[in-house]
Length: 457
Image (cartoon, rainbow, N blue to C red; front, side, top):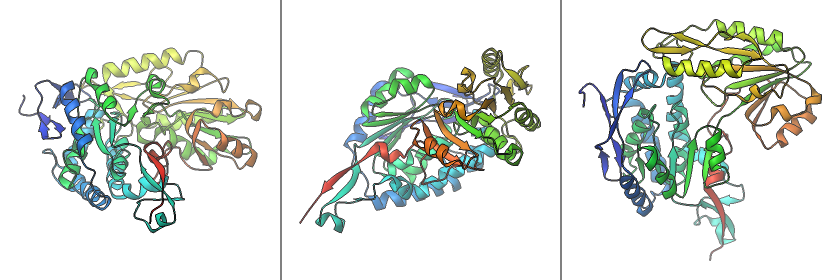
């Protein structure tokens, strides 16, 4: 191994494990940064068996260990990297801007502190946490786990999703994480910190694998969480694996609302965090002529500078130039027939080192149900379309977040009742608004926990 490369061992039930098979993790310019161990299927099977046989830490110990882990994650040298070195590495490898990395890692730290409370926001009001509670003497629901082992196929486009699965630890699950090859540094650092804080090696493991062993992690767990595109959602929908797919978040600007008063919120919803997240707005529907709003959005987004991801002023995501060109070709092909206000000639700006910035794109559609309105890409790419009450809520469906600038109570009732709209923000609230304790796409506890009636003497 090159002595200059960061070593990322698997973190198994017996401690760190350096596999014979390793892959090189490169930065956005193609330069080698780290070597990641890839464990074989047999290692996965044995690790998952160890998780199943382990005993869950008592709740008080879990709470204390999670809080300690957050401090270790943020304050100590972990895996040979200081916190600042880790953040810079994540930005350089993932292409996510440094400011976004800082915000995401702050969210992870906060999640370790509040997970024991946030995880239990999903508990029914009629249930208690423990069979020892006084309520069970009269008969009460007790909120308890559906299983013991939780598996995560992690995303690599953003560090933020790692703030979610720590809730499973707070609920008493043992957790196995398969890191993304694109950005394995965050889960490696977080799991190392959790172990140093008091979670045993048989409580939380990191299992980097080839694709042929990846499904073994999910098969061996009681429940799982996976990130991916529409094909992942279709594959796992309705199973004991929870899919997290495209957000297709939207904004609605009905008549009577002056979009000029909300332009900052609209633009921020599109470009915040480099436009890489599922909670970024990908479609804006406006009652009336969409052209003036589309042009105003384009003018704002065009002013964003193109910078390397590790630059403190960077806003836009960066990818290897070859991958960026493929995204550009896809966009140009799919946007045919639309009116381009920005990005009509391309969205790639090469930085001269093999990497390229993904510049914003703004396209105007001629109807709200155009197929392009469902296209979500990992950079600020927005489709602006006309909408009228006669179109109904059909064009607003299938939204992780919908921000609607309306006080029409009949419309609000209809939007809230629509099952494919996960989160509804009314008024001047960006689509990326989130805080611990409120659901991202329902509470994780709704998926992992259940109630049992207990009555005792």
